[in-house]
Amino acid sequence: MYDSKIAGKLLGQFESFLGRISPHFHKPVARFIGDMMYGIMAEKDVKLTSVVRALKEKITPKKVEDRLSRMLSSNGLERDLHDVIAAEGAAKVRRDTLIILDPSDVQKPYAKKMEHLAKVWDGSKGEVGDNLGYWGCMAVACESGGRRPIPLHFRLWSADSPGFVSENDEVESIVKTISKHTKKRGIYVYDRGGDNIEFYRFLLSSGLDFIVRLKERYVESWRRKVMCGELASQCRMLYREVVDFDHHGEERRVTIEFGVLPVRLPDIPDKLLHMVVVRGFGKQPMMLLTTLAQNTSREALWQVVEGYITRWRVEDTIRHVKQSYHLEDIRLFKYGKLKAMAAVVLATVYFSMVWIGNSEKHAVIARSIARMSFRIHGVPDFHFYAIADGASDVLKGHGGRWRGFDPSKAEKEGEASLFTFFGLNTG
Image (cartoon, rainbow, N blue to C red; front, side, top):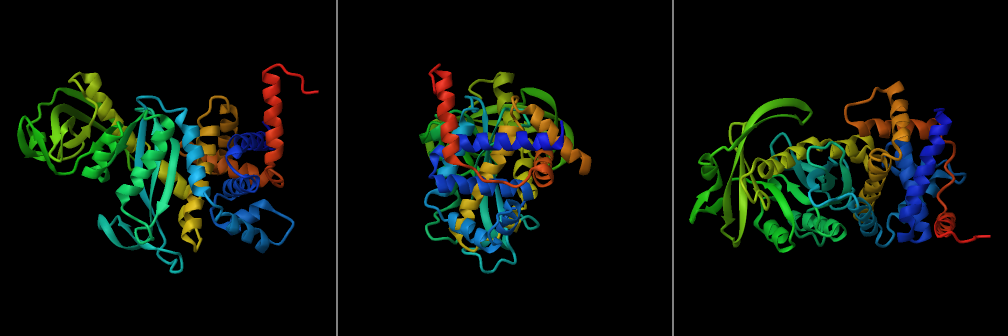
């Protein structure tokens, strides 16, 4: 397939995607979203100056940048983009689909003028340190044992911003947005950060299934209150399994054993839960609190164990977003614009990873784009890096000048397709 033909097909699918989401926005906002997504894909960069360079408009770059900056303040842009992407992804979420919550941060150590910079995680210390930036969380859907995540939500926030309540409140808001569109389908998977009594109350009161990795805490089991670590040491291992997994970029093969115990949380004594205990990943047993594992069958327990292992397998998603689109180079002084930009990045990633990268219908385009990347960079193991690299090469090298998205044209084409579908004469 010739490069220009690949570019034409990619732009055609891009306009189809924009046509699908544009009815949820006013026409100027829909055009703006198209410009931003195109620029981010072409330049693999979220800086407005890079987006302006990709658009190649005839007016001065300063005027284009001012327009884009102004449109980032559009009322409801962040909320509406989160809603429309969650609604798109929700169609692919089944009852047993995992919805993985992956907390992260964007570090901005030198950006002194950006609004509401706050202290974020210091990986070297294993705690919140003196690094400045913004907290964030990405939610992705994935089938258990799979490696094809579907981005559902991505947001940034500051612990020092007006109206901030807590990280727990931010994550609950993400879950509310997703569960509204999935009709409560899916199993929410969270690391130790989810081991929070208020978060448990929220999930249980909302009727949502979950798998959360426990820290050391008191639980009740067999009418006694005991630390979960002590209880885990007494758990009888029922099954054994050999697993291969990629943990932080390192391929591992280990033999694990796992069992289960019924438990209750002292603060929520009316809810019977289960603690799946896994030995083999480290010196201490891994403890997973869940609404699942209602019986002791291998299948029931393996659903929980594999579900949590899958969380490790999709950690590359947030790394892909940061690296492929230079997220930590974001340069927006206003906090509201920063949050809106995160939502625009979500839409861009969804198009790249799901509309193109995960679609059987568009598999030929995806392979062709990946090969474009291979000729220059080599294709990494994580499929979506190749898609992002290839799309950038195609759009910059053979894509021609972007003429913008026309929501009115998309509406007419949509109406025409409906007439055709119902067998009506449009003449």
